Length: 143
Image 1 (cartoon, rainbow, N blue to C red):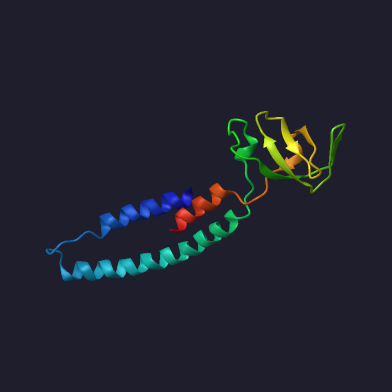
Image 2: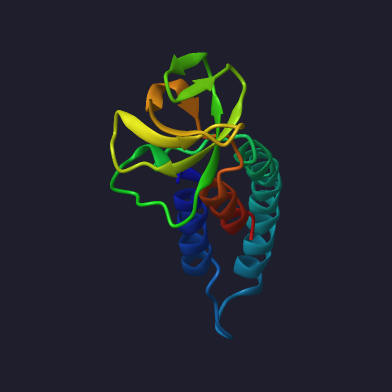
């Protein structure tokens, strides 16, 4: 978000600062060219920051599926962060399961690797990357 605001402010500043017409003096135009070179250097440095954001976006876990208000359109993969056992389901740490329903904040309807389905505490899982929203935002900034 900060990156998008920075780039928007920079764009607005550039439009204001570098507007000129036929009446602009040669000296003023030379000064503008020199200032633009300095700003180009700043943009190149910022480009490496944005590239870092794009790289990190691929490793950001998803938080929206944890919110019951964010209704799932399709089931999504989740990963167990601990062992969990009850009569109808047994899940082990690092098992890759499927989140079938997140309509309750505390318990999710989960399908285990063996195909068993049950309501399991949501704290037992993480929604692994990639976070499509984070990647899309980073790519928009990069544009």
